[in-house]
Length: 270
Image (cartoon, rainbow, N blue to C red):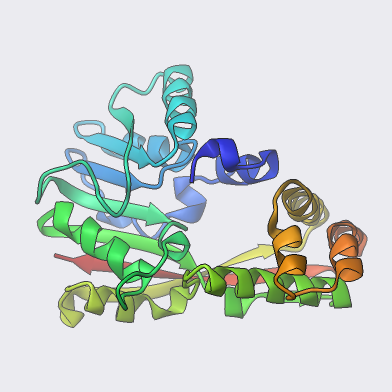
């Protein structure tokens, strides 16, 4: 997807990510001279954080969006990072030779890939990541498991929103099931003995986080075509769809509001 199709709420969400918070499981694997590939790098915040951990090595960020690559390149200049570079590329057809990187990383990318020829999107992505990873190197991926979302309090509109997002993803042939990471990696050709899996919870419970997430969800839905698609495809009634954005804003105001989702994480040795 090109960044020109991202709304500002999505961009803000991606720019909030850091390696310390979103890729902590990867950091113990890093060595100063590693060559790293960050697939689906977006605006580059995680990529540049990883670069700080490999001062004698390098990090390359790849995204299908030229606008994302331009934004990430500008951010690298602002931060004065010299061992990171960015280019346009497709995760399903990476522009690199086999066995090129010591570590290949993806954060919330595989679940957005469509399946094809009977093969799930995450498996297709991991196969390509495995191809460009050096023997003995690491392929790391963290992906949301949408079935794990916990929201309190629940309203009709929020329930409909969660179900709608799952249905739209499935209808597009996407698999947002990070808890199946071991299965995906095995089907991508990794030895089961070389696959380790873990999980991390993302929570929004204090007032600033609730306010940010509620407004982010509302703005994201208002600026995208998801609600319109849901109505057109019969997944949600028009009247309910119209109330969903404000339902997230109202949710965020509650002192007892709670949001949590589990991300599955895999580290695979080639």
